[in-house]
Length: 99
Image: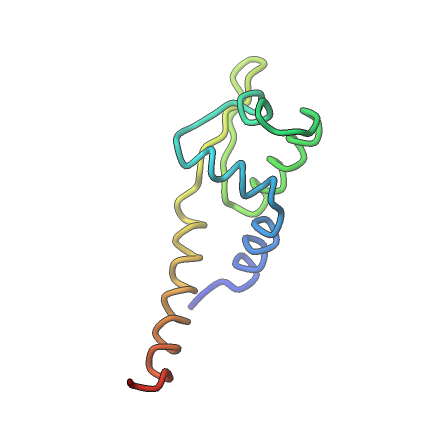
C-alpha cells in the first residue's frame, strides 16, 4: 500500500523548478549546500530553504560535518514515485485501445 501522504509531499517538493534542479545535481553525486547554490541565481539562504523542503519530503538527506552540510539523494522516496507511476502506467496500458 502506498503512503499517499508521503507521495503528496514528494510531488509538492518536486513542483518547484529550483528543487528539481537540486535533485538533478544530486543525481550526479553528493554535494554541499554551497556547491548546490553556486550555479543557482538565488541566495544561499534561499537554497538552504529549498534543501530543507527536500529533506522534509524525504527526497534528500543532509549531514553536517563542521561548517559543511552535505546532501545526498534518498532512494526510498524515488522508489515511492516509481511505484506510483508503475501502477498508473499499468492501468493506462490496460485501458488504452489496441491498434
